[in-house]
Image (cartoon, rainbow, N blue to C red):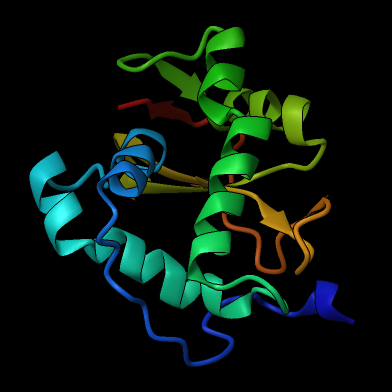
Length: 161
């Protein structure tokens, strides 16, 4: 049963640098590397390389690198997590509970998300990543095999960058 397997680093696939500028611009607008500049992101492509090698290696059959990124953008648009957060009053620069953030995402995906944070669990924590998991053919969202949340206390307040 593929739904019980962790879909990371499944098969060795080698990322090919994207040379098509419209594709790079589309990816940068929809799936940017928030840890570097736009110029370095498009030049080095470390973030996209990492994502493809980690998750794209698990894609089935016809999903080569181009179709993997096209699908990622399609799913990002279908499950617009930023809009879901904003629709629940969760905006950059604000602070909300783990439960508020998770419930906002669940309202769109129908499944509670993974949430990774950085910082001291006893002190201030900052939301780093929201993850949603799919069946291998990406036709539906499923609970992540290894759930990750920022804090065991659902009332813990988290800063939204």
